[in-house]
Length: 382
Ligand SMILES: Cc1ncc(COP(=O)(O)O)c(C=O)c1O
Image (cartoon, rainbow, N blue to C red):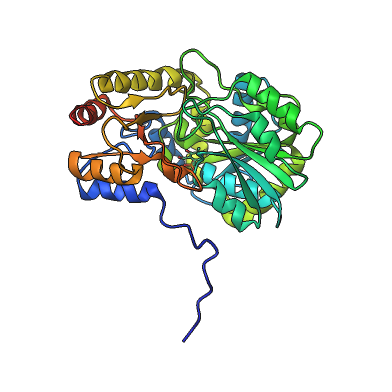
């Protein structure tokens, strides 16, 4: 009898996104849980992919990504953040932001290194840190607006701190960091070798006339940062799994060492199609307006309900507090809502290492108006 090795991640199970989407399918519920649109990507993108496939672009792409796409990303970064990364030495196209995050963490975190993580946080960070032998240092964001308590961050930094992971706009809360947050972060780590891994996959979903505070805008922060984005979010193509990382040459060299053995390269015709599509900036420039209209509709529809919606300044997520309806644990409540009223959501406790439960649910509003109306009709009944 073979003794299989013990698990390297014994406390990690199937992600909540898979669980809740599965439950939604089983109960034919409206799925506002996992973060993906229920509408299609632009038709032009589909035509471009088809054309590139027909033209024979179906073999391995270059390891760092299709050159033309890296050039386009560089131009777009200049337009948006007034900084032009070198496509040859500073941009790597990856199989989704998930791969970029994993490669970035694996590239710089060594055994015993500490990595500061702000909670609640996206679920991909902690396993990647632990697999690299690192130690996550959890710092809670401040409820109810989920701003960063930088004094607390300062207190949790030590001589062993290798990196801090930030995420703005923030999943699951919809909070966005400000220019002042970036200044404070820069001043805290200025005299250290601490790196920043900045997850900016929702960079084009910032509402109410605000602009996205990318670390790339910040001259000193960007020299120590790996910035990660995802075309899945921007172009309604989460299933294509195409993302990228922007980092200074020395960090890019190390990140690519991971990338080349994780996946080597990323799907070719989609990269070519996105490069073409990036000629036009209309889609991503109008995205804030597109998603803000959905957020406003969803919040307005929930007004007669007993849910209390929290401010969502970015992303396509809306938090709602339900303690006026029930005192159940959020995971139980989310499952019951799926089974009994047919609306699936994500309980926010899953984004905390100690499963902190504030009676919040996360709803994804990247859905058609019809879907949002049907879901709200059911939620108002509670
Ligand atoms: C904060 C955050 N980072 C990274 C990702 C992963 O992006 P991708 O689908 O491009 O791998 C997601 C997806 O939901 C996310 O919400």
